[in-house]
Image (cartoon, rainbow, N blue to C red; front, side):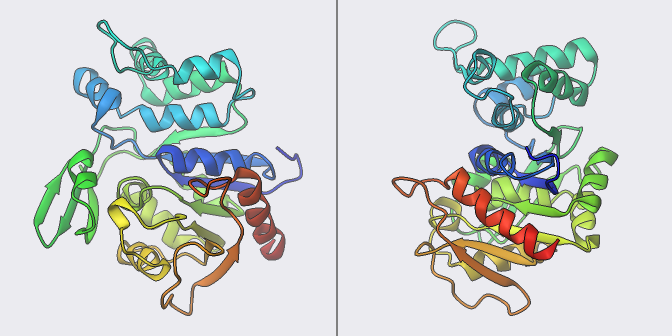
Length: 295
């Protein structure tokens, strides 16, 4: 990170936010990740069912992305997934977070302890301190649970969390208010990005921001957003109460469509080799240009 760099906040989950954090550490002076904890599948789902803690999987990915040595032994161990035995399918980092939660009595304290262990370049904060359930609505009716919502495909209109009054740490609201730049995405639109935006206190904090909110659009429209153009992604954000100031789009990627005039569209070369994921260096350069222009 650059000591003179801007204060930035990334919101989302999964692999998408991890890529954004890898980009942020190339230009930011201060980084805060606000991470979805609504996952109810795989290792995360099993641990939250057994111990009643927020889903740790996306938090673990973000801790590794910000680790002082992302390729070091501890970072690699955190991502190690066991095969066989009683721990089959569990990532070691998920088990460590569950154990630290038991030892400290607090999921947030567990995340902070894991961050110290990994010497992270920024702070990782769960979107809520309580376990939450993601729900979705669309033509087929109401869907309950992130796995169900994710598997339903493109017939989604809105998502929400239950309970809607789940506790949000004050540092989340403070970071959003004070950041020079807030970045949403990339990642699964409904089950990662909007799973965080759907938290009422976070949505209100985003609405109250005076500074930039950048939405990094996905490279391709697949899964939950198959058939979406850039405008449809932006409209989904607006439908959930947040209007980005800027949408960052890979040049030659998803077609633009009719993006609302109040949202600036910035195109840049963002894809990595093979075009499957954003290249952290290219994404960092594009995001840094936006901070320099609006700083």
